[in-house]
Image (cartoon, rainbow, N blue to C red; front, side, top):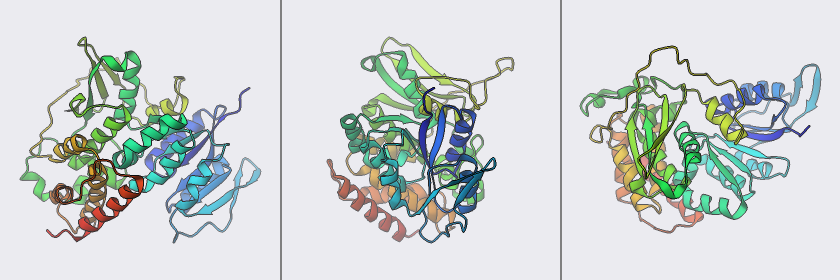
Amino acid sequence: MAAPTSIAVLGSTGSIGTSCLDVIRAHSTSLRAAGLVAHRSAERLCQQVSEFQPDWAVLGAPDAALPASRVGISGGSTKQVAWHQGLDKVPKLIQNAEIDTVVCAMVGAAGLPATWAAVDAGKRVALANKESLVVAGSLIMRRAVETGAAVIPVDSEHSAIYQCLQSGRRADVRRVILTASGGPFRGFSKDQLRDVTPEMALKHPTWNMGPKISVDSATMMNKALEIIEARWLFGLAPEEISVVIHPQSYVHSLVEFRDGSVISQMSPPDMRLPIQYALMFPLRPDGPARKPDWTQPQTLELLPPDFDAFPALRLGFEAVQRGGTCGAVLNAANEVAVARFLNRELPFFRITQVVEDVLNHHQFDAQPTMEQLLQIDSWAREEAARWKT
């Protein structure tokens, strides 16, 4: 019997990470959590270590207290787990030959070094950290070709596109269509969006996500990021990417081919399905994800987006068109603006304005190095933090 696939789960205590562990739990004979990384949720990480018995665990925040007991206990057996502190330890750990697959589920540009390390080592990368490709997609995908790394998306939209592309030749693709739920403010006017509070923005109608991603969905900046991600992940031109609003979150994306055929991937909204697909591709075994119930009547809507009320979409297409440093600047400015909104320092409708202003005033470079991208990331964060309402 073949040894189980060894998986490092980066962001194991977040929504994607815990869903990933659900999949590993359901396929314990073929998948094994060999490494777990959390930011500062020490207690929850200890519980995961106790259950999954990884070889190592990392608590990322330098000011978070490591657990007093560093022994994982499960089913009466005891295993010494190697504990580490600081995200700087992660790249070397995941490049170890014993790790087969790396699940990159940390939020924000902080996940970029780990994504790069996994691709550099030629691993299978189950990518949920879209910011890595938004910031440095050109460099990462080029390096993946060089090392043989398989980058398989975990985002439901990009997983859907990845699956749909198995139906035909890349040369025959006319365009991909990303679906968007529209978030909690679908149908709102610009005036209505002026009074949005953090509590309102965090109430997503379909998905249970962390605060930052929930706000991105509310502004539709998440779709702007996904536009950029799709461009690099699938080697698309800007005119080959479209967005439609799909409130039911059942059609996860579509691919239109030159002959007029449109292939979609549909399933109930459950992140465990795209996670399992990324971990076990090309296999499709039964798993813990929700299954469709075709005995119930359903209505599926596809609607055009409102670029006027949600200008973040326009910024996403502009960043794809220009390329270069635009993705890094857009992402960094947005991360800071969202944090300021959640801290009640910035009105909701100003988030996109901050991003646009910082984009318009940055020193554009069409072919940046990784070092230059990191530098412009820092600059954009400083600019967004100084922005006055």
